[in-house]
Image 1 (cartoon, rainbow, N blue to C red):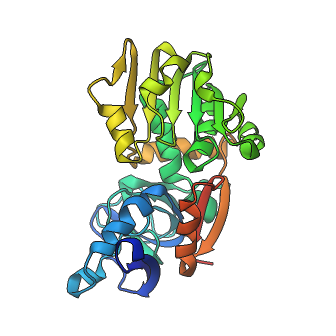
Image 2 (image 1 turned 45 degrees about the vertical axis):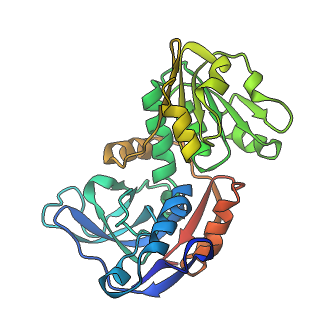
Image 3 (image 1 turned 90 degrees about the vertical axis):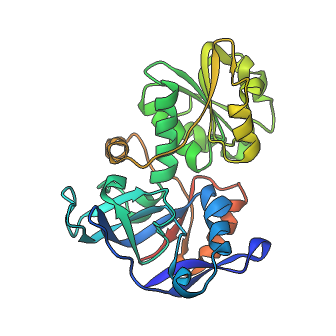
Length: 318
């Protein structure tokens, strides 16, 4: 089968495809014929670096770790798998490095997938898991409910576009922060108010938000405290070291306001919740661009610009 891997090391690393063996199915796993995958910042911040440092010799040469999200068809299942059958269309993700979703076939735990939404293509479904689960679980962490006031910083990106829609589906009042060129998109996804950060300082807002969800990981509890209600929660994706430090440093609370980091987990009950939202017309995929598996390097370059509207998708089976 064909799978994505890396060539070179550190700054000279690039993504290529090569021929390799199909992965072996464990007793609690399924083998998925992958139709599509997608790119997340974790892929080029972590997975690509680890892959570049793995020697391409002997048994190590068989290790592929590129890609977390997938959508496809089950072609084989482990002996203990009971919720899925061969032929089922599924979607999901697994944060473990072994998943290697950017390949023609991938092994994934049955606990990390769900049946694909019927009203989505494979490409659309592949854009959902990691980004939408991050948003959903962040809102669970922040206690978002009917009537909550939520500020989404970075509302036009992969996680942000899902956060706006999921928050609205949960009954929250959403304000999105993005550049002016993306304001119409974010408003169309359900934001009641959109702040163009290129024209005004959103940190000067006085709306007393119950939850501030910083998708960009550039802010902190201290920088956003004035925006928050007395029991407000600041949630960060903690996408880099400084953001992680800002979230977990000793002063992680200011009075009754608290800061938390979201560590996304693949849970099929959450994927099923997203499926309900999607099939109910409450959540849709926003696709910035799509690339074939052979052009995966270009897909990563597009994601790294930080200017994508929604998700960058990898088309594996065409």
